[in-house]
Image (cartoon, rainbow, N blue to C red; front, side, top):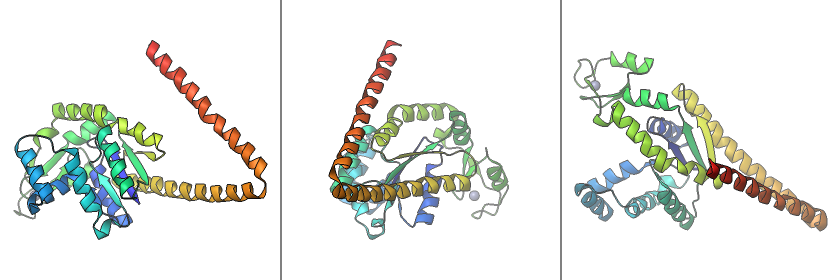
Length: 272
Ligand SMILES: [Zn+2]
């Protein structure tokens, strides 16, 4: 299963990717991890990426795609993958589409994790990291508050919680604004390709994982059913060609009506 998880900062993408990786036995491919690993190994792509980062520039999409390509060639990615943190904008989504088409490994599903804006702000600004052991807590949840009272395995003293500089409330709304502007358009991009599934990502972590798996497997089941139907349709068409043709014509009319409706909608929007 080849999957992309979409979601705003704080929607739990990273946590859900890790849980999915264990349940589905497919690797989570995080572009952040790929970059760090390539830089550490000193590969050619890694050297170029380091140059960009040291110069304060963004790492070029082509470099990131090159890293994804290398990663997908590894044995554990043969059964599928969960892409986390990429694509973040339309140009990246289009480039990824092309790459996966070349590799003949197109995506099976894209899941959008929906979380209310106020909840996102609460989650991100509640995030704390222990300066000694690196564990991440969320003081906005009861589980987080409880874990906060435990002793640090590193020092034997209570964890020393610090807030990452970009997790404060002002920075959070800026990150959410960038997400809305750059990444949210991907929802329509993938919806148009018939890949999108949207789930409610609020509530218990395990409950969200259950919804996520349900959405993914519903997708696989629907795909299998479509394949079955089209096989059946072919059989019917072979047995009696005319009725099948009539059916197809009736079907072909529908998108045109949809288009007219969409046109009306955009005209209405323009008038506003
Ligand atoms: Zn600690």
